[in-house]
Amino acid sequence: MSFYQKQILPRFLNQIMKKVASEKERSSIIKHASGSVLEIGFGSGLNLPYYKNVTKLYALEPSLELFTYAQDRIHNAAFPVDYIQASAEKIPLPDSSIDTIVSTWTLCTIPHPELALKEIARVLKPGGTFAFIEHGKSPQRIISQFQKILTPFSKCLAGGCHLNREIENLISEAGFEFITLEKFDQYSRLLSFTYKGVAMVSK
Image (cartoon, rainbow, N blue to C red; front, side):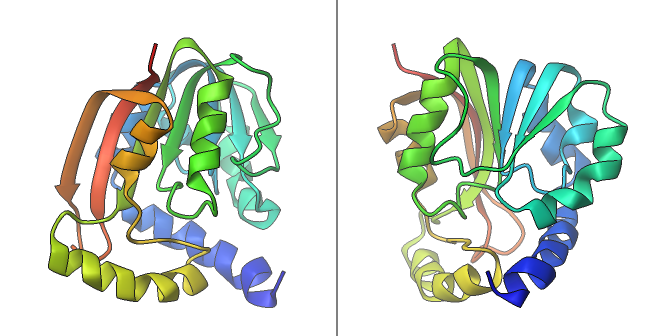
C-alpha cells in the first residue's frame, strides 16, 4: 500500500464524503435500516447518527486507516458496532443472517461489484432489504463518454472510484428486484448521476 493510499487518501475521503451528501440524503436511505444491519463501505461512520431502529451494526470497511476516523461516532452510537475489516466481495458472515444491508456511495469503488452484490444477496435474511444510494453512469450519451474518459483519473485519486458503472443493471443482474428506485442528476452531471432505492432478493 502506497503512502498516498495509507495516509492521504483516508483523510481525503473522510473530508470529501462529509460534503457529498446532506443530512436529508443520508437519512432518506438509513431510515430503511432496522434490526441487524450490515453497512458495506462503512468508511468513517458518517451514517451512524441516522440509524434509529438498529439492534446491531456490522461495519464492513477494508481500510483500517479510514475506519479510525469513526471512533467518536461509534462511541456515541446507541447500539453495538462490530468492525469487519474485509471486502464486500467476500463477506465473513453466515447465510441469511442480516435484516438490512446499506451501501452509500460504495459500489463505485469495489473492484468486482457483481461479486459483492452476490454476497449481499447471500447474507440477507429472506425478506431482508438492500438500501442504497450510489453514483454511476449517466443515461445521456455525451455525459457518459466524459465519465468514461475521467474514470481512470478518479480510480487513481479516489480509492478506485468508477464514475460510469451501470448501477441499476448490476443490482438487477445480481438477482434483486427493486421496491423503489430513483434516478437523478446530482451536483456535477459528470460525477454524480445518482441511483437511490431499496431492493429485495427476487423470489
